[in-house]
Length: 149
Image (cartoon, rainbow, N blue to C red):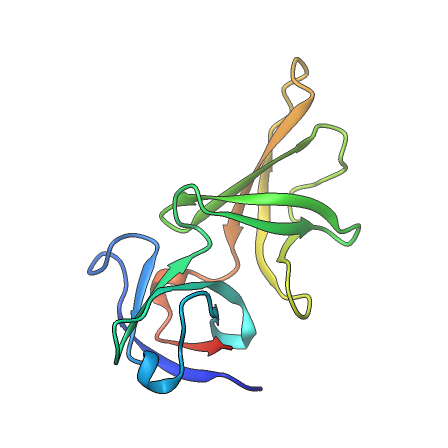
């Protein structure tokens, strides 16, 4: 597909957690806000800054980063919230029908999964449940990414 292939120069713990530094920047046509995907097209995050010949990528798992998403084959809409250190969560109605093992997809072109539900809180006193999400791939072991316009 289209996009700019970039090597990862730094990832945690060398860079701040939930930040990747890549070896392509504005010189290669990369701009702030471009979407970034890992191997297999898995969405990872967006370009946060572009100083010239490199760029900083803010991962979807960055603390407090909110991303519109959906869970499962029923496409239950949720807002995924970054928890830091590669983890994410969401809050849904308790009776939404989300189960452990359901895939989590980011909004955008295509339907590429970014994570899987690893726990669904079921507090009977609350109308909402917290959903814990683990990325399908460890974002801190990725060696190259594709930056999409």
